[in-house]
Image 1: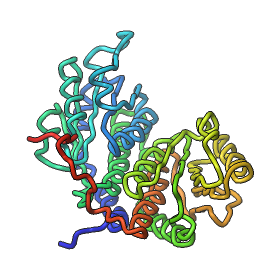
Image 2: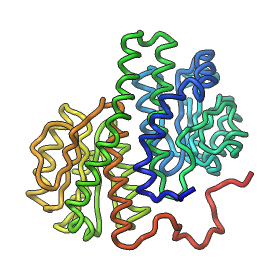
Image 3: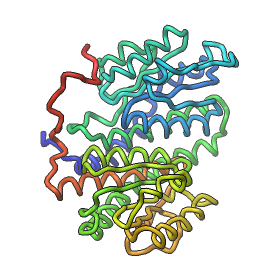
Length: 365
């Protein structure tokens, strides 16, 4: 079997997204039954790195679709520092702790689930690797159908995880009568439309990179800002840039970027803005983009599928999806930039630059 490159995994993502739709009655059966047989009111979502960013998106989906209180938190903070039920508003059996580790062996995430169990909370483990540590620790388990990624910087797994848990949340909402059949059918159609349009996002994002390549390859520092459902997208985009291309990169909620960081910005800054969905925040983004170009740097790039007056540097996608699913589309351009820029400057993303592995974040089983 040919080993896929980072770009190869991105281009293969629509295949596993379709798997997520086609196989949802298989991987979701036990979890849906588990949820429906309980009365969960608060859900803690935890994971490290890319898994943490995915948990932030999924937290938003569950809050929106299932009307639960949701908190996304880093696993070590959960284990060592956080009071989960300080007001005693919830019974222990109303609290669920969800831990995501694509390879299933994250020490911090596994320890967070063990801590949750000691506190008397139910636990759900999520991974692609069957038989991994998290599958043995968690009370319940969901297998990801993203398939094993053959290189370190995760792309396909992140994207597929978002769709898989959107589908699970939709199914639970329907079976618990939070939504009717008509709404359910529309939400599933939204997912299928997304999968059908996904190759277009990859194609247009790749063409955008090729057009901007000479400018982007000179980038020495960058910031990425998003709002609403796509603030986590900015966090994941920052992680991908930094762990691959290696240039210092920061991520902000759109409005927070105006508070303090601008003191450090100069004409060599590259600023990326994600226009996830229409509304007041989108209108604000359009004004902020113009401000950055006027006051700081010409290197400002807007990524959006909404209607706006695009400059030559912007990516204006020809397709879009619903706000709740939009993080699946808007992470793609940044995954592609990370892969393509690394390749352009001779960084092999399939080879880890870490040589001292005496301290590892992975658990042996």
